[in-house]
Length: 197
Ligand code: HEM
Image (cartoon, rainbow, N blue to C red):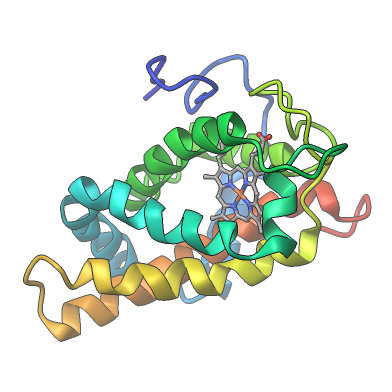
């Protein structure tokens, strides 16, 4: 599902490197996280609910980052410390697509390769390169794990905005928590000492 329309978006592009983890590594991780078919169904159910709310969701997520100086530094010019609006805007387009991709819950080889690439883009290997930004060279690892909480907590009201039952909202929310944490775990690979991931 390559989409040339979003600059820098590369899901499904053959130029992506092969992920250093396999489909069976993924399955074992999902098993460990109690990630089930029910979670896949719940994620897919969330897609139609979230599809026309991605802009509003991103307003909340970006509002959180913008109002948290400790996070905004990663979107700011490394020399001046000024937030970089072009960088923020470029990443935001791909972030909107990421909401839909996460809800699709495809988990194929292209998806694994794309997770690897997203991870690299948070590290010194590839941060800033996609958008030609002049920001700091890496997002420090601890914040990746930490951001799972505000991302999934603030998503929850959006899951309830289209008439799903409270029980369905709980299931979709639980699935989203797992799906985001799962991705953060995969993204962590380039941060982890060789052989320890
Ligand atoms: C890029 C999600 C944690 C800063 C991205 C992208 C996504 C994403 C979807 C776009 C990837 C692409 O298509 O190129 C997430 C999620 C996180 C997380 C779900 C945690 C649950 C963080 C944290 C920061 C951060 C804690 C620190 C502020 C960035 C930056 C980029 C980026 C600066 C652009 C990287 C580049 O130069 O290519 N993130 N992120 N992210 N994220 Fe995160």
